[in-house]
Image (cartoon, rainbow over all chains, first blue to last red; front, side, top):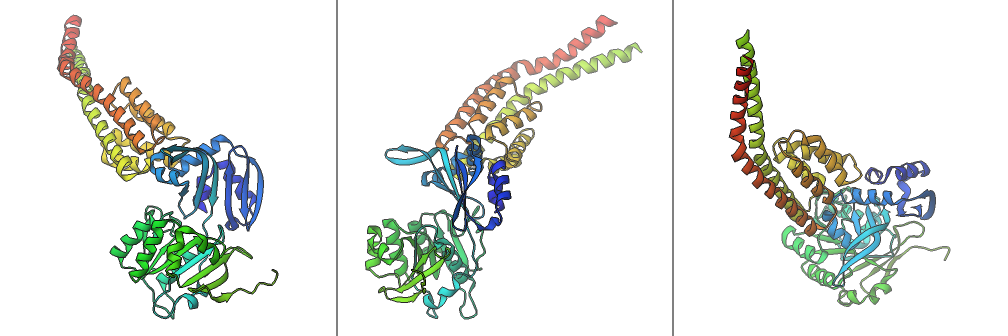
Length: 306
Length: 170
């Protein structure tokens, strides 16, 4: 959290620190110019009595870019910046386009600071479903935004790369396009992982997966949020190269994933052997169902009130 | 007693002359150093995408005084959380400028250059660096010319003026 406090303009940081009971429970800090500050903690949104000024916005953007817009060119194109500690800051404002493509965001008016959380141990209950005693099965984690997909994936990476009593550690390669899984700063992962881990930071997924397979001979390859056509191809390549693929996908259920045209190929080939559906009820990271390649349910959380 | 005074006057005026000539010698040399530093900065921006503070830190270690101090101050100001890169640059420039042999014209060039730091994408930043380099190039040509013309003269002028004063006072 220190990285976030250091980033924020002083009045905002001071207000947040005194108005929050448990700072580690913050999920998002939303900063919009000329509008009150918003904090989301434990799933509840709260507006704080402070109107964000233009100077605050400039200051924050300067801090985020380390005073160097040229260094965050790619990030401005994609609309978010990853900061120390693996936290992600989403940006919105006036977009400059060139030839129909987004070139940068200028005059940033909204910042959304998503606090990355490390929840050591949440992937452990998955282990009997995804590990067959020798290798890890190809696994897809499905969830809507803010259901803890990346957090679960991160802990899976930790678990696989450090091993347990019943399972030896395996070589894990993370292709971290958004610098979100490992939250690298200058190439060094910010979260706790096992020793057998290699990270390709800020590398496009499709290309990065092939690079990792060729250069690092991983047992398990971990990528975040596949969605584009070339990602699907790379997943197929990797899976057929004998590497276990773990990934996340936006969606509420397995049915939603089937609807995604870009993922059609992967789904039709039945590459993935396990699907983990996440829900944010009762809290982010809760596993709703685990399904196998044919869609039969291996595990379903007992739901009392629905 | 008289002779001691005469010698003191001569020594002082000779020293003034050499100082002026050293300044003239220093200026083109420092301009070359500054140009080299800007080229390194350009490489850091274009190929390394290095943020300004890190690039300045590296430059501080690569360049000689007084510019090493300029970049060190700049990096420190950025890391301390100055409001803007232009402001940090201006402050460090003003603090160090007295120690250089450079003139007001060059100060303006560097100040203008600082106002563009970190504001644009890579290509535009590169253009701004190239612009500053072109300006410095021109200043350097002038400085070399001045050096050839006046450096020797300043030195002899110092000695001769001292002699004149001594003769007049004797």
